[in-house]
Each structure stands twice: as structure tokens, then as C-alpha cells.
Length: 445
Image 1: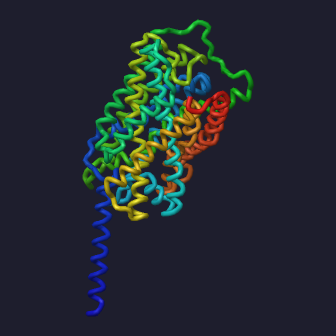
Image 2: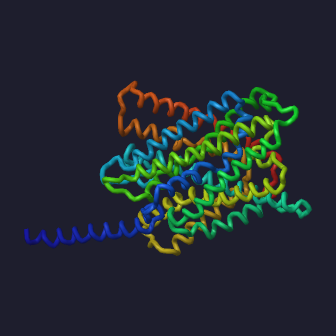
Image 3: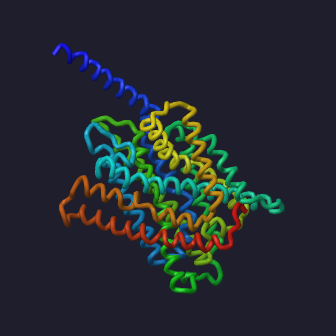
């Protein structure tokens, strides 16, 4: 017995050191380092994550889907994604004393350590990295549009340079350590999203229904119409891709047994979804009603006057996608830094963070500059949004096992079928759009 005591002591000491190191790493990682967010942080983080540049492509998506299917898919998406978001908020602390701070941790709880990672991480990364690339293109295009509107006689500047200007902001902002530190940027972005959405639909109303407006499908062939329809599905799905960062946002809210984090988080989500409805429905329906199938893939491209108002809207878009980029990049930073520090045993210090984050910003900038196909990119990446439409339902069925044919069982299966339908069809349409646009494209023009 006397011999074992030192072994036990050293084992306890090792465990203490291990937990101390893990606590030190958690205090350094962006998702778990700060837990003092208020409910309204959840509201504007969710607005910033949800109402992306995707809202400006909704009239174009309506033109590809048509009135009936378009309205049904818009409303269904709003209802389904609100339901799946509620599920995520509920599941954050379903195990007493434990918090699932990251999407893949919830996946691992449902499907097992390895399988959970393989199921969640690739899907989450495709959406988050995809959104960051699309926002590089959006930020660059909006800056270019602003420049063209304000200075009509100026020499045209390549889109490539505008994407680089937009990226330069992120080489600075990406070094903010965690979600709470970007709350100011996120609040500004949330206000901007409501502002430019309001400008988009009110300027459309001011312009009125165009002469010879057509609501029929634009494509002349049946194949073209079908592929455009798939593409429209992807654009709507992309507009609702905010769930990838929900658990990570909730992780920043303090929680006690008496006051779990789901209370303030849900309050914030409800406010965010009201704002989402105020942005999405007027822009989509009024934009399509006024311009029909002649609308551009970004409605601000269709609106030319008044010049000062459209120029302002484009700057609002730039400010908004700066915040959105940061919201989607933060979980990616967390994944990369976790891998390097926990698995590869790098020291958690400023230099590691400096290299990792600058590399990520540079990589998304390079891909955005190389393939700036806005509409096609939206549809292609939007299609990979099972993390929004049906993955929460699959996890819910796996963990809670609701009674077969009960309301919960039916609801979840309907969402899953709808989500798979979107995931299979949207990327096909998006890829075709990219291929068509790529025919006439010159690199870095």
C-alpha cells in the first residue's frame, strides 16, 4: 500500500496539471474564452449571421422559382430554420453540468467521438468557409459598385483590387480574440443589414412596377428552367445558413442551474428572426414584383437611382459583410487553433494566432479573387446547408428518440426530407451557373 501512494500522488498531480492546461487552453480559445454575453448579443450576432448578402439575391431567386413555389419555399424555410434553431438552443445544455459549445461536440454526443466529427465538421466547414469566400466577393463587388456610382468619370478599377481592399480590413479585425470582442462590429453589421434591406425594397417601391414586366421563367429551354429552379433553391438556402454558428454564439452566454443560457439565447433568437422576416420578405417579394425576371442577381445592381441612396446601400453592405465574415470566421479560427494547440501541442500564443488567422484571410481572399461568381457561389454553397435545415433534426431524433408517428417524429422527418431535397438539387443549379459564367471569364479581371 505504502508503495502505491506516491504513484497515486503523481497520477493526481498529472491529472491536476492536465485540467489546469485544458482550462488555460479553453481560456485562450475564441469560443470558450468569454462567457459574459447578454441576451441582446445573441440577437445581433444571429442577425449578422443570418441576414447576409443572401438577402439581396432573394428577388433573383424568386425570378428563378416563380411566385407560387418561391413564396412557399421562403416561408417554409423561415419556419423550418426557426424550429431547427430552437432545437439547437435546447440541446446546448441537455446534459446537466455540460455545455456543447461547438457544433461538432453536439455531433460527437449524438453519433460518437469519431463519427460525430466526420459528420459535422466537413459540413460546417463547407458552409463557413464558403460564406467567407462569398463575402469576400460581395464586399469587393459592393466597393466597386460604390466607386462606379460616386465617380462616373473615373478610370475603372479591377474587381480583384477591390476584393484585396476589402480583405485588408480582415487582416486587422481577425486578430480580435473572441465573439464578445467582435460584438461592436456585429452590432454595426446587424443595423446595416436592416438599413440596406429597407433601402432595397423602398427604392424598388419608389421605382414602381416596370413597363413590360414579366413573371414567367427566363430560360427558354426546359432544362434551363429546371437548373435555374435548383439554383434558386440554393440561393434561398444560403440566405438561411446562420445555424452553423448558433452553439458557438450561445457558448458566450453565462449559465447557472437556475438560469440556463437557453433563456436569454432564445429571447435573442426570436428578436433576430423578427428582423430576418422584416428584411427577407419585403426585399424578395417587392423586388420581384417591381422588376419581374429582369432583376439582377443582386437587387442593388438593378437599382441605379437615386445614386446617393444606392451608393449608401452599397457601403452598408460592405460594413455588414465585414461583421458577417468575422462571425463565420470565428468558429473556423477556433477549430484550427484547437487542432494546433490540443492535437499538435503548439503553444497557445499570439504568434500562432497571428499566423493562423492571416493565412485564413489570405486563402479566402485568393479564392474569392479567382472565382468571383456571386450568384453561382451562393447557390452552390447554399446547397450544403444541411447544418441548418436537417442536421439538428437528425441529432434530435438520435438523442431524444420521440415516439414513432408522434408530432415531434413527423415534424423532424418532414424537415429532413425537405433539407435533403435542397442539399441534392441546389449545388447542381449553382455549379451550372458557375460553368456558364466561367465561359466568358478572364482571371483577375
